[in-house]
Length: 564
Image (cartoon, rainbow, N blue to C red; front, side, top):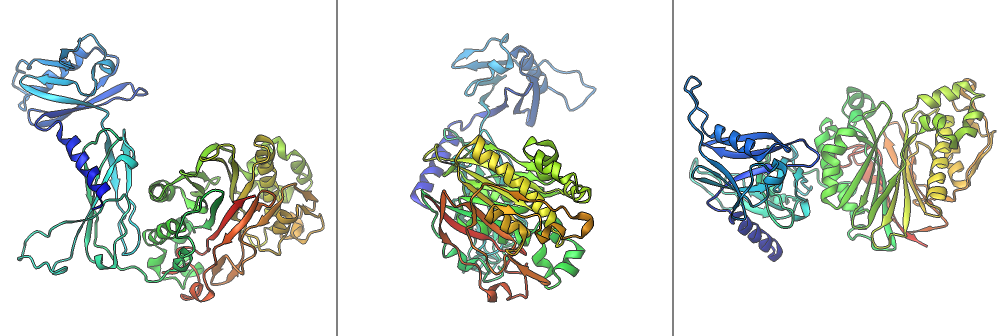
């Protein structure tokens, strides 16, 4: 245990021990809620009373008195309740006061001869969850929900219990194995030597001035062996340190949504070369947590993020690594976009998310495009049926609030013959981004990430890069005459692909190509470093992606950007 951890733990024990020998009455009271709760042990039973915050204290005390004398035999007449009084700083509290005013932290509740110390809104950990599967050399990130506490002031103690017969421990038959402390950080990465061991975590919630009741949870199964070398291991060698101002690290990554990976079609048609267990959510998320945390990004734009995965797995895990996240669901879908930013580097100023089809018809910004498209009903209908979204977040530097950045994230229409629809979608997206970065926040640089489902030879890519697309471009008729929509478009943004044009960012059995990009404002940002892609041998070591060593069918793009 480090000296700092030892001091923290010692301080927690001292704080927890101050009320030693005295029962506790825990009061939970929030201004936005009509009732407060009072939890205490009466006559050997745990009781929780719900009382109106506005009612007089005397009525709540009378209820406590009655609860203290409730007979287990219903036919017996109730005995007179013990006297119940509330004291604060040695003085009795007026029974005419409201519950909201009367129940103060540190007050004393006397129920007959019993004395309770009142703890109002103490730090609590109502929920604590651990992954079902844990692999050696992969980080374990607990999911927790805290009340009146924050993770930075809470204590985490990990324990491990070696498998019988290991570590020189030969207990007698039937003897209880000993738990040993294994770590004192919120995230634990088990070592290879821990394979077969069991883990448990004790969380003691804190708010900086006091600690609440600890909550303990044991992992369901033992630590398992990992897959060995992963495609991202070599890339982590380039990202061992976080960047510092004026450099920021950006990542764009299509994670492959579980809603698509865990289907019979995925197992038998899309990814038949991938071991079925490697398509399972728990397994892939072990790899994703390690991969993303190891990039030490300041800005992280993700696509194909399941709604439940964001709230239950991804956001809690990345929050533990210092990243706060925003989520935008696609229209009528179970997956969407997620943007994470390092809270030590950025604060959120505003969000400007849209659904691309909905914005085309509802936002006057796009009325010229809508009018031109009205001449092509087939293409217009197809465009409006799409569920694609655009996530736009304006962030400001914590070191210099005048330095802001517009971070955009999208996932365009996937169909191979949908080049015309992607052109329309990107036109709406760029117009919206221009509005945010040129009008709402004039002059702020742009970082535009995503899975654009477009190779460098397409009209979508040349339109973003060059600023114009002619009405004669072949992509306007990508799905035949019925959906053609020839028109000339332009935009004023000066964008370039920060990571260039890799040979591929998507590698599956029947296709490989560059579909993902990080477009940056070439007038305000310059590329400091592009993290090399995995080698072709690494990508194809299990034929294609995803695999036991790579969690998605896409490959993350990573670059370090410097403000000019």
